[in-house]
Length: 356
Image (tube, rainbow, N blue to C red; front, top):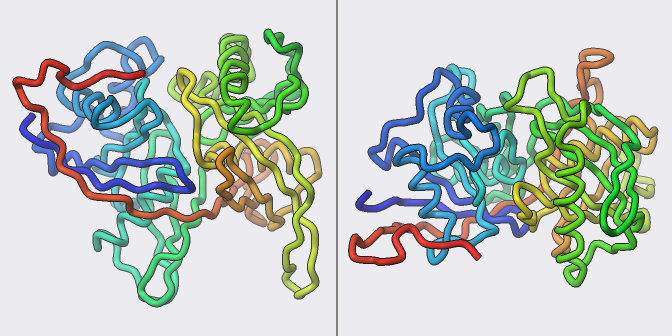
């Protein structure tokens, strides 16, 4: 491994480091689809934390570990799509391994595809970037004005609610947990039920609570996905709080009040999403829609622990029928933060680095 080139973005504060596998000179992981390649990367244990599985995983470790990365790093390997219907595929990765969905990463990839000319885009208007991810085919609609990208809308795979009010015991008390699948499995917990607020000061307690909830749900049937083990098991725990409804313009020009929530999503082995979590927002939308609190086309203003915002909505007519799930869209902003060439000096005793 002489060098690895990356393009780095952030979406609402959450990093996303992009590596085009073809440009590294490394062979892609075996598999005919992105989902099959992801299963190969995760390994037989299914946890995403399998021992070294070849040079591509060495690249992941190099880029996510210090001093080149950090424990909060996120990224993706660009791989071939499942078929000609998508522009490319991606394997999402983080410090603990791989994931089946990543909304903030999809938004960053949409901006990257347009920035690099991989997908043509107008100076004014929209361009759609179709991407195959392990959970299915998603789309990023890149919004452009005056030759600049002004926002990206992520359309996810259908989101489904699988369990409600599941009692879970934590060291902070009992919590009622809702479970929904939106490319990955998310458990939602009201932070105040555990005596917490969603704030930077409370992050240690929020992370501990998230890890305890995830562990407690390890065998719960609501975490199982009909697509099989790759899509099953809690990936993220969303600890949320209600904020005052926010005024916004309606189609008729009359101001209305819209839902406003703040969350922190604890995923993998205690990693914190700095953004409001794109796929997690889809899961929240499905739950709010089932509660009758959010109608089709109505917006949820979804805020992160660092104050950045996604706007989510259920797409009108975006369900094929009962049990098919809801089609959701999440809009945010993604910005390039740099392009890098990382090297590993053979004399460097730290090697690929370390995690704290």
